[in-house]
Length: 182
Image 1 (cartoon, rainbow, N blue to C red):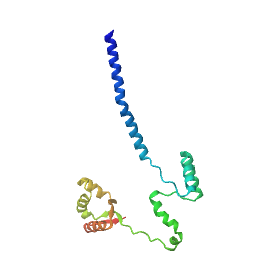
Image 2: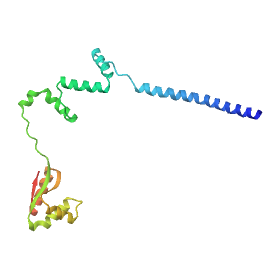
Image 3: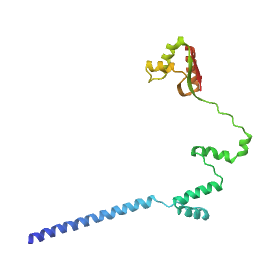
Image 4: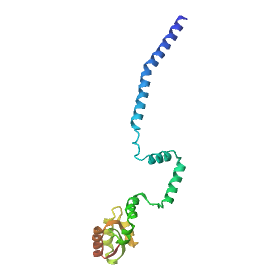
């Protein structure tokens, strides 16, 4: 019986000493956790106008559905049109100066990117054109290049700068092909 009591006493003392040893670690980890939360959540500076502060407080108290209703109501009241985000930065100066827009007519932008389309070819120049097409499109085999050329009109290259498209057009026209830049 004494041995059982001794074993029970030893195990209880071990648990108590473990709790004492872990207590400072737990309090330190809680202290560290609260320290990082409080330092990272710095309060924003108060607004200069108390009216704006009240509006911010009122809006932050809204639910998501109420905020969505607020946005649609503001858009309709302020006559704000739906626009894509990248175009919003370009549209802001235009909306600020509508008189200037009417005075200055926009010139159509000159096209700089082209698609090179093979329209037709001379029958005698077919082998040369097939070899050139195979060289232009790296993944084509000779058989695929032949099928490609025989099924004209086909787009040879897409999104080419104007200079490269002109050079390629000249090369193909010298071989006997009719090429169009789109």
